Amino acid sequence: MATVPDTMRSLVTRKYGFPTVWEVADMPVPTIVDPKQLLIKVHAAGIATGDALLTSGTTKYILGDVKMPHKIGIEAAGTVVKVGSDVTKFRPGDAVYAFAIGRPAEMFAEAGFCSEYCVARENLVIHKPANVEFADVANLANVVTAIQTIEMGLRHMRANGVAGGLEGKTVFVSGGLSATGSVAIQVLKNVYGVGKLITTVSTPKVPLVGKYLPGLVDQIVDYTKFKKLTDAIPAGSVDLVYNTQWDVVGMFPLLKRDTGVVASIKSVPTPALMRAGMLPPLPFFVYWFAALAQWWYAWKLRGTNIKHEFHSGNIGVRDDLERAGELVARGLVRSVTRVVKLEDIEAVRAEAQKVATGKGGVGKLVIKIV
Image 1 (cartoon, rainbow, N blue to C red):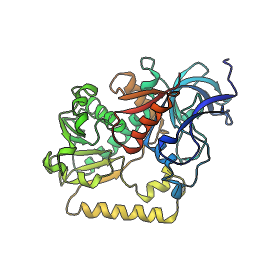
Image 2: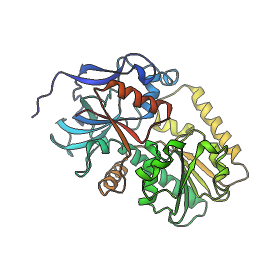
Image 3: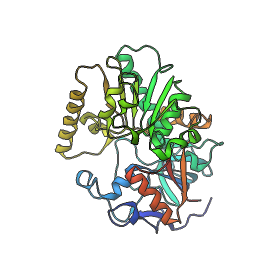
């Protein structure tokens, strides 16, 4: 059995702020405290928007304070070092992908997956495909989310009377070179056989779409050159919108008025979804705001049969997690990543700042530990 040190290098923040205040620090190596947990030596870790939000302090008035210093990161790929007594699917030496948060969400559970070691629950761990590098699998959560969100969209389309699947359909994905958008495009085209795929990027990224997503995008829209999306895409021409941006209302006019569907991963969730374990219990006014947002969406969609629903990816759905791993293993989804080393803190800060602002980055930010 591998010798585990007492301390490890971790990406942390000691105070609320942008990623410019993040640092690498020595922290105690976590220990297994539940028989269904695994200790993993991390090779690569993914950084998500949620990491930047939590450490910025934006959510503290709703979710409460985080314990400082706060270890950053909720998904990683690495090698199993130790297993709890009730773990049955994994053993030391296994190469795995792991996620930190299941349902109900434990937003302040000790995670810190952007560290040399992390502890994960067995139900949120999957074997890494043998033909994929550790850094390239550290975005698997977005593959799970894409599968679940697309399936949700299909259910709404069928409820609107649209027969069959997405073959031959027109789909719009916002933010095509984001960590989420780039994955969704691959799943939609390579798995669901979408007929026409349209996406948006900024001017510098237009030539990069063909590089990172060759042959998958049928129409690229430079959103900086159009005041409204309907100036570039005919109104009422889209069957499904896979939304990755907060301006979801601006995408409503693109959809077919009788059958269109918005499957969103970035809009306001319903109070019911919040209470169903997506988030820990929240102040009453948050649920009121969420309900008001649903009324606003309904008002903007009045006179149409367009359906809109937000989805929060649930990595704890085992079938979806395993399906995501299979898609990656088969080469149907290849993560678009930018990789920096943990010890290069200035590069980590610079790239994480792009995650925080949603500007300038291409694909998933992955921190290389080993």
